[in-house]
Image 1 (cartoon, rainbow, N blue to C red):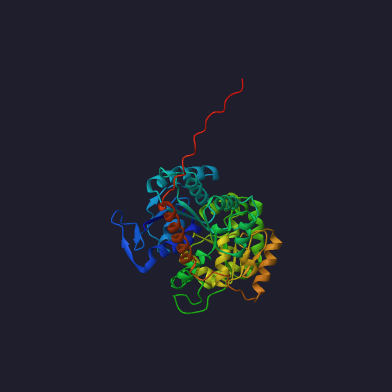
Image 2: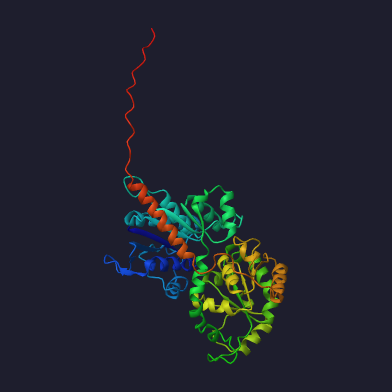
Length: 439
């Protein structure tokens, strides 16, 4: 049976979720060959052809290219090069460009991951298209389905809900997803609890991340020069959501909430260029240390005394994972980092009032702080004093992608068996004669 699987990525979180799927598809039956029609496409003995589409929603080298290298992702077969824009314009542009690719490739399965604009745009384009005369369209599979923050002011929440309701297969990463989809009336036969492919990537990359020299580059190893020595205590900060960084009052409140911990230890902030621009626009440069990387631990101690946050360039996946593994504390507004810190057992403070990943609070290392100065400060204090143990959620074992591929292949086989089944023509109905019309 020959199957063509199209996988869409568009933004940084997608890469970690898609990489294990591509590896699982490529490694199915442990037999890999090259497709003679295209050197970048991979087929396996089961007849699976993978077509990787990058929409270009994140388009700079650090946010995209370095992640492909760190995760050993193949080069995209199709790059839509959409770039930035408003939610409406970006979603529309992705749909327009993706439709042509979809009609040209005619995949059996379309896999979309996560909750970014690319996820919804490509799922919606596939749901409304007919690629052949009988009117069939690809099987649409949504990886990381069922997550809900119940906050519709978040664009990602709209993307999640709509993608789930137009998909044929919904792959769920935690118990809350099962409950949410059931309450929304999604048929149970569409829903599959498989675990978390982002954790697949983390577990597969942990040893390589330990080889990263980022701690030395940032002067966080006492003694430096790559020697085996204790790591200076530091916190890791990542904020990117528009509600947190596009409003001066919200951003200032978060910074004020971090002031206390920033006086105790270094706070490392890999910031997207857009966030850096906001810091300048709002006149908050004096809250950060903007110098070059590579200072020693004494320099970090002086920065801590001033309560400054160390603002650095965005990092690749392995460097960032290494920083997260050794951090005393992580402060974030990212859903994926809530999951990764839970897996690593690193205390996490989420500067949001809600989360679509409640399992990270229920069984993991995550606490919700809101965005007020006092709420953040209190949450950080609790987390730094906490000695509670965490446990890994069910299915976060590095095998989620394998479970997904098994379901995809079974579903394709079922569809093929239905398509090949002979069609029985109904018997011709008796001719109907017109009843006489009364005079």
